[in-house]
Amino acid sequence: MSSTDLPPKLYAAQEPIFPKKVKGNFRNLKWAIMIVTLGIYYITPWIRWDRGPNLPDQAVLVDMGGRRFFFFWIEIWPHEFYFVAGLLIMAGLGLFLFTSALGRVWCGYTCPQTVWTDLFYTVERWIEGDRNARLRLWKSKWDFHKWRLRVTKWIVWLLIAVATGGAWVFYFADAPTLLRDLLTGQAAFVAYATVGVLTATTFFFGGFAREQICIYACPWPRIQGAMMDEHSITVAYRDWRGEPRGRGKDRDNLGDCIDCNACVNVCPMGIDIRDGQQMECITCALCIDACDEIMDKTGRERGLIDYLALTDEAYERAGNKKIPILRHIFRPRTLIYTALWSAIGIGLVVALFIRSEIDLTVAAVRNPQFVTLSDGSIRNTYDLRIRNMSGDDTVFRVGVTSEEILRVDLEGSQDLMVEVPADESFLQRVYVIARPDDPAATQERTDLRFWVEEFGTNERAYQSQTFFGQAAQ
Image 1 (tube, helix red, strand yellow):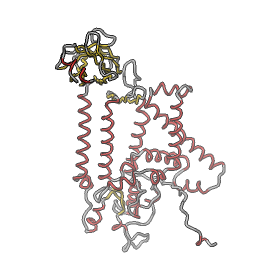
Image 2: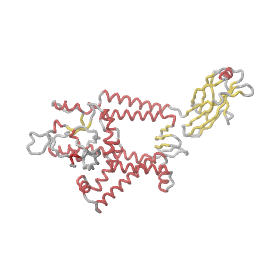
Image 3: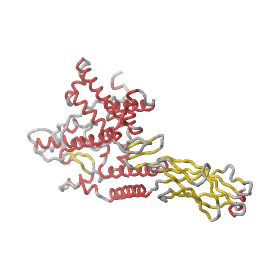
């Protein structure tokens, strides 16, 4: 059977990509964003913040045991999940906003996969050399020199991966204490398992899978493509200026592109931007830096590869100057996204500042629905959960208001006072009693309202409930 008679292959092996080092404004921007984002990720768990004697002095902490989230002076409790929901909505709207305005700018600069892959590429380039050296090493046989470079690179990658997994678990416990426990073997199994899983995924995704994660595993290339329109800014090639491409002294019939492949050699996705818009492109703009450098050397105008919108082509082909980027960014669609994003953010901030440090939930005990006492009085039972979200132990006074006359008794308390520890919730059983001659004792139901009042400050919280009488049988 000849090779032409063989069935087509359904799988193509990964072609290794060896991006070349490049200098320029966008490369400098990526360096700055990498330093800032990695710095925030690794350093944040170590920022101290005084939280009193009962909590770790950590500025950012996800307290799974206490089911709370701490962010500097902000404390989010489980019943305040609407703050988290609001932040998720803001993140979604932010994605819509940036994608409609600047295309896949998230993928190119701040996506964790992009940041860590870029860091791993930097380590690889530092140990094995630039593009040509890495290509030669890839094709060479496995001798001592190749093993030495590869093992050294893998060790550095592994150290970065361990630091990545370790930094993540520090967000869920007091960082200094957990680090000591990890090093002495006293940490919980889940901590070691989490560090191990994140270490393995970071090492594999950033060191080996790389662009394959972006192309095959990540849904954003498909989703973000649907969010863009003809006014969205993305990295593109001015083919009306660069074509026909070619080299030679006589360039009267040639465009500005000299077909040097500099844009291809620096691309971490291994694509040729001159082939048009492609799903693989993450708009990192390194090809812009590479092309601008060539344009400077050949004495031509920069911008052969640039941030463009689809509407720029017809406009520039007509002989006009390029449209300012701000005109693409500030348009009705992006302004609407900005307004919605800002409104939700302002709403969350207002809700954060007006929220009370007291929270009350009341659950009626309905088995039985009521109890008839020896003197004929009707008693209903309720469970009050009082949350003290302040940093001090607080005494609360419990009361009930209603159109009828009702008496309140607290289980274990004679003076209607309840002390709740700082940053904790307290469950208190409450009995509400109606005298035999009171209408509440005989009618089916009576509306009432439970109140808790902080002793000394008069800050209050309430919740409505129902009192059931004999007619409810």
